[in-house]
Image (tube, rainbow, N blue to C red; front, top):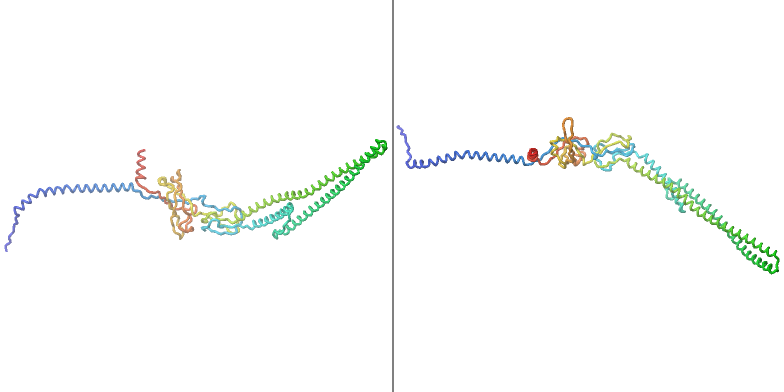
Length: 445
């Protein structure tokens, strides 16, 4: 079988259309060939813009910056050292290391037997002096000495003072009676003298009349001169006797005044003597009262109490019966707040640290206890660097919100000298603010 090849021929109209469209097709191909490099250039430009924006964002966008270093819990005056005020012998021990105590809890008790014995003796001495003072007051104020208000321990003392009181009263009454008797005698003598004086004055009146009659008779030559002189002599004698009686009356009056004064003086002297003795006893009572206050304070101080609420640390190993002196520290209390830690930073790190920046403190890992961060803040950045053997550092002090980890104070107690991990949050950090801007300022300078 013979095969025959077939030949296809395009119509003349189709060829003419193709020839007409060929220039436009060539132009389109040339346009596409020139557009491809331009798109690639735009893609590169857009990519460059995106990269620049990212760099600007990285430079300008702040992010949280922190510095972590090792610090040490500082020993400050906020940690209370416990010292007994007085020396003594340990009688009770109520706490151990790590115990939580509240303010005024008794930590340790010292023996008070000797002090209480002194206080009892002082009480008896004071009461005895008070009995004497009451007796003197009763004498001075002329009152009854009440002996029913004193304790039985002072029965002997009260009986003695009661006897003295009664003896003083008897002596006073005896003296007063003797003076009163003498006074009555002087008054009786005065009355007798005044009576004699009255009689003598009447005799003088009669003698004067007799003298006057004798004088008239003598002048009229009816009587003798002897009678006249005898009458005058009798009158003179009576005058002398009257003068003596008047002097004697004055003497009796003076003696009566003296005896009345002695009676008054007797009462005053008893009051004065009682007042003088009471003044001396009052001084002694004041001294004894001051001594009692001192003993009371000393007995109270034998119960050594916690000054603040906190954790007992560093208690001195003592047992009951041991002696402690007044200047011996027996323990220290770590407060539950307001502790400080010191961290040493390199100068380039310390440049970012400022006061009041937030801080977290991570305590050391305790046995079977969780490690939890403790918050705090920066309270001081040293102005001058500290040079060590290997480097130069800046001391930074941070304050802790509390001194223990977690909710239980016994979890982790940060005693002075404890090493802790300190993280200081220095705030927002950006390349522009922390590198570019400072560098630009330095270049401008």
